[in-house]
Image (cartoon, rainbow, N blue to C red; front, side, top):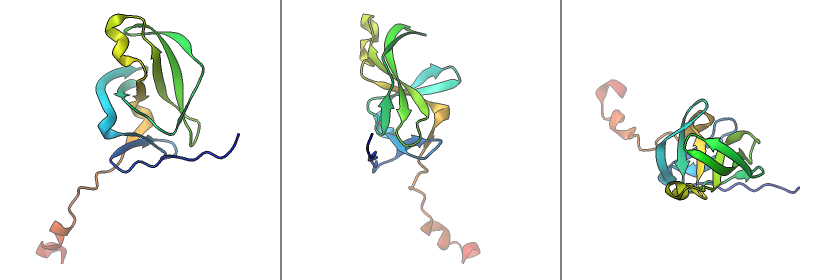
Length: 125
């Protein structure tokens, strides 16, 4: 098969919960209002470091769609699915977009914490 090279993401990202591989940028979220069998899911414009399973027709909450399951390249864990074909006109916006199940991904911890402000507090010196 060959060696897998992972794409690193510079900004705030979502990562595989199981192996910490970067999967998608937080800025690429299109919707946080999707659902999956185990709860919430997010719709993303772009994802990286994933592989795709075979196309299949699947009945979703919004109707029939042609989708592929997407898997983490780091550990092989199922992360969600990608919409390939949405036959209904009002669902066409989903084509080419990926849904990541929220319970399968983690969000980068914010690096915006200003720890220097604590050092000026006499209690911490």
